Length: 284
Image (cartoon, rainbow, N blue to C red; front, side, top):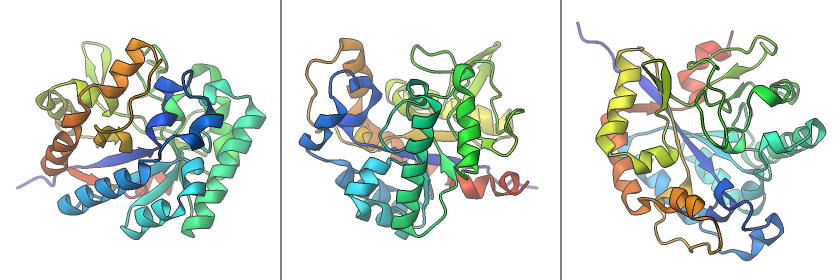
């Protein structure tokens, strides 16, 4: 008797190259409008890739992008993908006070729903910036009628992470109204290894990333939650000068290989939208 392959969650954090956390101290927000926009073409490139491989995905989209390029939102939903929120201005949740966080996520949700005509259920904090010190953000997400979050990464990292958090979907004890969908990790000798994509996917050989996801699908018998950004398929994007060497390395490493690796990933696994893969859990 054959076992049906697990459907994993494919997700895209829709932001442009000048908005990333790596350059937050190099490019002020008030200068974003002066940089050439490349998110439109890059999203279309991703949509074409997903169409080729029959992939459905969740697009965590910045309100700042949606407000200026509403046709990007319409292209996403028009191709059958889930629209979710990445907040409005790409502020780390850990850098905002509760009132400012509430205003940011409410503004983004309203914009995305107005443009798409659909309910926005999900939210992902920029740079996975919800952790032990700001779990109050989950309560605000529930108050603003989000139904799930994918914002707590159970790893140790110099910018984010909550290593003691659950590895698989859960309802936080203090906020059971919200479902948390953690980015994927693999338990290796008591340590959580990142296996969810992003810079790790560009840095590691493809075989290593494939092995990590297969471990989750076979050993844990769970779906994986993978993510990447539109700028990662764009090796010809403008180079940002003045950023620290570590930040530039993280941002630019192996951009030229990303699209071909994504194509292999799309072909090697089954992929779906977060709201559909976790439909049963969201209804509880």
